[in-house]
Length: 266
Image (cartoon, rainbow, N blue to C red; front, side, top):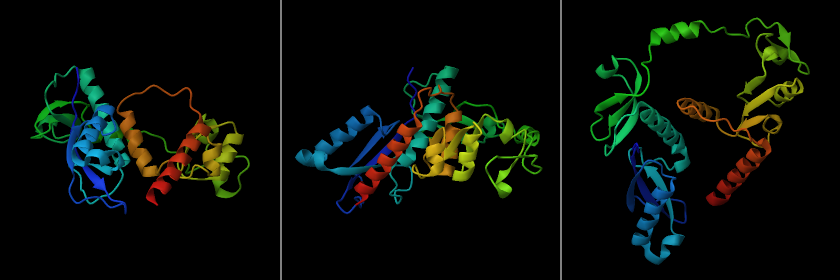
């Protein structure tokens, strides 16, 4: 069964100065703006509009339902695509028959969800409720769960070898007992000290050439808030771990992507 979570995408011509045309030359419907089938539709529209010059024509793709003043690259929409894929998998798992129905997923609070937040599938044209995809988010239960989590750090009883000052303070039930540690902000000294302790370190850093990025076991080259949003989306749908992770290769790919972006902007 194919589940359709679709959007309309505006395709704009890009001029040599980097600006885009005021109006799109095509509107293409699709679930994933980077899929092969979607791009074949874009290519067909290019050929119909620009003929022999189609191959030389630069263009930009933007979600039609989002503000068009934003000239952000379509890659910024990738987290929305990932979310849709996760919700589509939930729809399949529940066995919902949505064939020939244009639908979308959303976080909803309504009478159908007992006035609690819940991920749901809606009819695209009218936002009509079709089915719930997740449990209701009970804020009282969540508060009880959160209050039961032990927060460490206010009374450190250990130190990280190789560091000086307050940064060396830690908790025996926290960093000292952990196998894997997330370092969300660049801190080369801390990352190096943790690696020396035999810890597997995960780093979030915009700079693939930083000491933290190069020393970590896993480096996420991204902005921290965007990383958190994408992580939340991925957690909606369990995925198989990558047992062949090559951090050096990841850093090289990130660096090449940054360089390509700089060259394209010139």
